[in-house]
Image 1: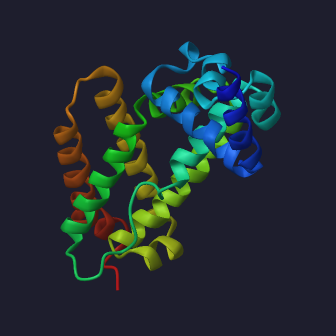
Image 2: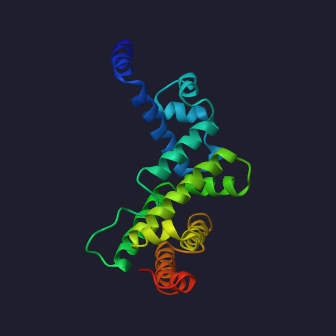
Image 3: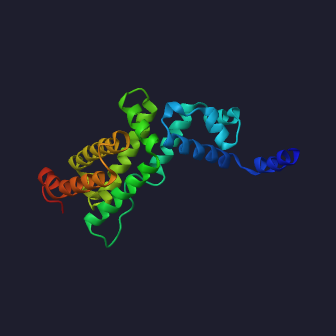
Length: 212
């Protein structure tokens, strides 16, 4: 037993603060994505990360702050919801790749995403709402990029407004899939792809006229 304790000490010493923080955050994200927020305790997260609750609190303060860090990381690594412009691919193909990548991300972080949407909709956490609002604006920027409308989105508020509306629909649709099970993942993908294609083909031109 003493040998095991002695062997563990060097590993603790070698881990840099940033590495330790990332380790705790990774374990927290795994637990938050498996179970509802309320059912995950800081003691459980600390045990999974192999640290004391005191050290966990040193890095993150409270469970809420740790959860916010997990949501922030989920929404920024990788970028949400679309990858960079894929040269040579058609618009529909790029949309399909983008939607699939986003659904894969959400599927891996099911409970974290659902809890974030519910906490945000209740209006009880302004900081969480700021995190989500910033992520939504990034989503609009990258959505415009992937469909080739980045200049129009920067110049015309109608285009950004339309993409924001689409993002709201996408959030609601994924909640129907992940929380309620009223839609399957393939059905969600079909809806998101077809609605975005229609938005580009019919709605945007009617809103602002032909885009140069």
